Amino acid sequence: MADLEGIAKKLLQKGIADEKIIHNLIDQYKIYKSFPDNVLRKMAAAILKESKISLSATSQSELNQKIVINKLLGIPQADITMGQGGVGCRGQGDFYVHDLLAKLSQTSVKPHISPLSLDDTGAIDLNFNSSAISKSKIILTKMEGMHSRLSDYPFLAGFHVTRAALRDIYVKGGNPLSIMVDVHLADDGDIGKLFDFQAGIACVAEVAKVPITAGSTLRIGGDMVIGDRLTGGIAAIGQMEYSFFRKNIQNGDIILMTEGAGGGTITTSALYSGQPEVILKTLNLKFLKACKLLFQNPSLCSGIHSMADVTNGGLRGDLYEINNESQLGARIRPEFVKNLVDPKVLEMLESNNIDFLGVSLDALLIFSSPEVAPKIIALLQSNGIKTSIVGEVTPNPEIIFVSPDGEEKIIPRFRESAYTPIKQVVDKDSMNSAKNEIRILQAYQKAQEKRKYFETMLKHNSN
Image 1: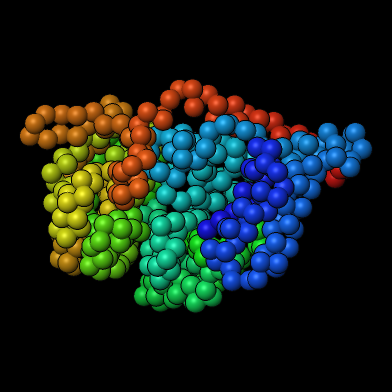
Image 2 (image 1 turned 90 degrees about the vertical axis):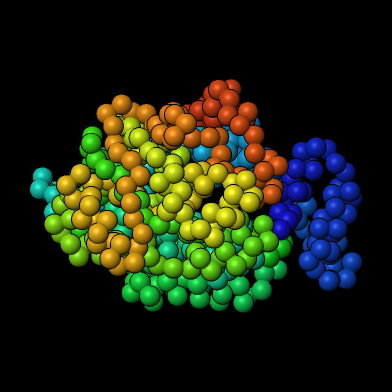
């Protein structure tokens, strides 16, 4: 995929001559388009013209308007790219930026569970004018983006993103009510990709008995982006039956884990390591089945304080996020976790030197009182879902991995485990520097100032 507008603007900013920019854009076009050269030249010239106009958007404005427009169109630069900052890579860099995004999201209207918790879902209380909290009035909300490397495999992308969104509703104690679809396909993408993506979504929706209620379908970048890249996400809404939020975890809780065969991450790893047969292991709904079984047993759910799925940065990353919210720690036995990884998946991970503790396994974590833990294990295993104890919650806010060789204090890495060849090349812990965080923080602070400026303007104009 090529962002022609981005290329044109970058070359203009470097002082490259117009004719060279046009030739560059024509070369990009020829990868995907079979139009005559004179048509491609007209298209390239139009892109160059638009890029020049947008780069000087304030030049025709009056002085007072120019000041406001500059504020509106200006971006608070961090001079740190997504890759350099580790954003989307499910490690320390990602957690740092998402914490700032959550702070930027705060408003005077307070949700029941806000983005600050970094929990699996958010929640709103429909009965917000009352001091009494009714579970039937708590609505859970979730937005899940598809795995970016599954663009060429839309059915798998749709299947796994939908399962992940529903999974996050379930782990917070909710029954999913609705699925909504947001999909973007670049200009040269075959329309069949849309149907394949939707088929994967509908497959999960049908088996899980959750309706698809709304959606949006757009081209990526309109006429300015060429290629066939697919991206998008799933929003899910649920009604809370049990309160399984991370803030409810208690000291002394037993940590249970169900078997895991992975989802989008394992699928991607299998595809790009030449082991597509592993994908078949990921096509299951055991996670959703486990949650439904628990919901049908209120006596067990009364002893469950929280649930989560092993996704963001694997167990290393998830426990860090959970610890941050609960202010408690955990002692984990990695060998017990390893026994719960599907053998075929584990074989693939080990053959490619991928740390099973640092990738999404799509397993269910249950934090329960010691009294109900054996009953939970018995229920799930009697229904064909392998489950065992992998650790316990401790008062000291540290994550400790306990093995026959000793104990190791765990902090998340800068990125999750490198599970594809390209990730293994670019993976660098050295990028997580204090200097980078200072620049990112400064960009966040500028965004806060911009937000407040325009909030004040809107309130003034509304009076």
